[in-house]
Length: 131
Image (tube, rainbow, N blue to C red):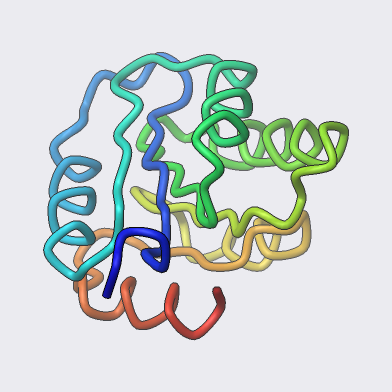
């Protein structure tokens, strides 16, 4: 697969959550699966994430959220992407997500939700199927 045809993924850590181990595991795992992966680092604002997704021209934005603020953060990011006419970016959420919140996340526009323990292969296959 040449560089131009690689699926580009931004892994972002919104909010004040300081735990990045899972995000790094996913970022490295997706890179090993052949994706071009950008990792934003910790404590990114909604605006920083939206800007990075647009500037990096990504196909997929993966939000790693462990803080419990997944509904509010995902909603703000999806609304911001729509405002910037970048709502063609596939938004995924991963982390500690209660089962009861998965439907609500999908309702606001999250394409896929991956909880702790999801395999990298499962995430990669989902992305390939959707992009």
